[in-house]
Amino acid sequence: MTVKTMQTAEVKELLEKVAGFDKSEGNERVKKIVHRVMHDIFQIVEDFDVTPEEFWSAVYYVGELGANNETALLAPGLGMDRYLDIRQDAIDEAAGLAGGTPRTIEGPLYVAGAPLSEGFARMDDGSDTEAEVILIKGQVTDEQGVPVANAIVDIWQADAKGAYSFFDQSQSEYHLRRRIKTDAEGRYAAQSIMPCGYGCPPDGSTQKLLTQLGRHGQRPAHIHYFVAKPGFKHLTTQVNIAGDEYTFDDFAFATREELVLEPKPVERSDIAARHGWEGPITEVEFNVVLVATDKAELHERHARRRALEENAA
Image (cartoon, rainbow, N blue to C red):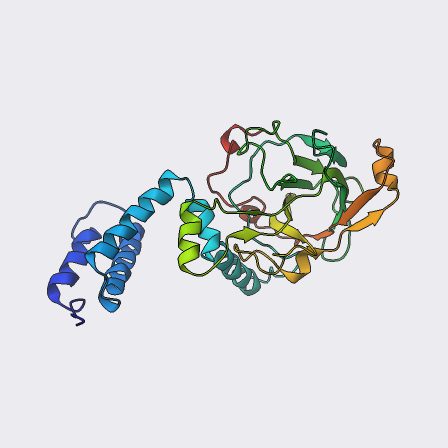
């Protein structure tokens, strides 16, 4: 039998005290947010007749999630990162700043301070001799098609086993992570290896919840990008490699059709040859369109905790 308590004076008073409404100290915005969050949790307990056993199981799950360092992994899995992008797209639309290359989620695996190159970079360290060699290339322009020189294209990706350097200690420092400054024609290029998709740790906290939802925890092969230059809205995006089993079934909801790229095998690439690679290679071309804005706060990526960001040059 459902017992209704949310509208009682006792619960209303409890929520106000929990949020510190009866105290002059503290942050008013935080108080309002905590009040709303706790109200909604109380309401869920009431609406679904949550038992004490279920409640404490959820509390222990949150603790386990933090202990496993998976909070930033579960967030995209529950659509939170994608929702923030949807909301930011709407904010841009209202501000007249829509357009350009679509944004999509950053993910939790960025590492700041990757080596900076002019025009071209070799991203891999050559240790994987069995991996498919790829050439990532493209041009950065504004919305009128004018090349954007000296933009910083910050690229990071997984290796052929779906693992990222820094988080996978077996890989060399900044393996498959580079920053490239575009040339006078706005062009950039990088020799790398074909990334592989990956899954959430099968015994981890994130997969435990996804299994309860009847969902998998797999990501398709993809390559992450930050693209930035003063005078333009900072772009956070990623491209998916067409043909992957999970390209349109990404547990993190990051796929956007405009960002799915067809890899193109070629016998020889002039760009790669100029930098010492004469053999067959697979080209992955990604051209970027930036949106101009004089709002300085939009020129930089938003603040969040990122590996080594405080130490980055």
